[in-house]
Length: 318
Image (tube, rainbow, N blue to C red; front, top):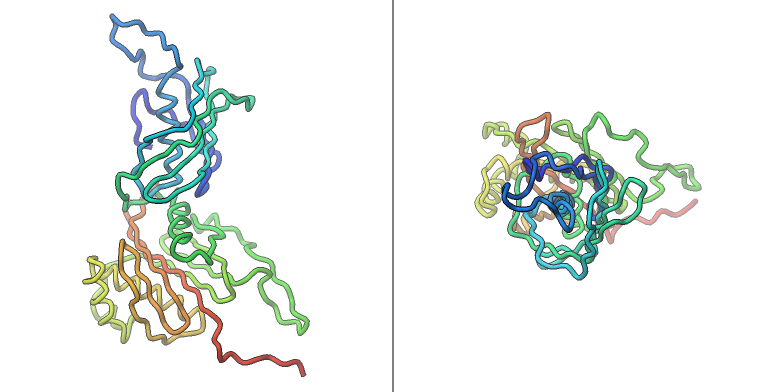
């Protein structure tokens, strides 16, 4: 978090999800009195630095927006903070029209509630394009909820920490294996591993956005090289970004059994690109990722779903 001095209170996150988070806040003020020496130093409603950390700390669950609180239905304030620290539990109630409504509860070390902010409304002041690696999953989940709601993230994080057992395999009466709950797809790039689940026809791909010679792109994209140029102009982004989007889309199509699709552009708005190839629908996102052990990396992420063909063969038991 960017807070400094008396506002640097967040001790760490115990839970961080797309619409819920739980984190510790230090109650000690490291910067001394709030007021000048000729003004009484006593605080009637506890140290406000804790509340500043509380209202900023939950915003990591909406990592692509710059938020400010604008209203609250009800606020019950503590008169003092316990020594050491408190725990803030926050969960989202609603979102829409660039506003997010949350409830925040402050608890002491024993779990007793000592302060509550009910139905706090935050308004977005604009978008962030650089996403910290630790909150990449909430960013992507929010995008997929709006753009590809049939796709769900199983895991997204450091490839070295990715779980090995990600799904349950069951066997049909003819002993052919299949996933117990729809399809599953995984991809790894830049030390990150994404695993998604969804309908039987689901795929994902992650690639680093890297400058490449035009001949290299020609080998990777084939007949879609011209489409990359068109996409770059329409989306207002560098050619390498647009070309990497198409590369991830082609990889998704290949995973869905279409190694040589004919992609066509559907929309290119607000940094989101939609592509289609027959029954395959692809959603493409690009963002800049930062992290403690990395600099600034651009990545392209694509997820795709494929509707069953109306001409699919019907299997008949012999």
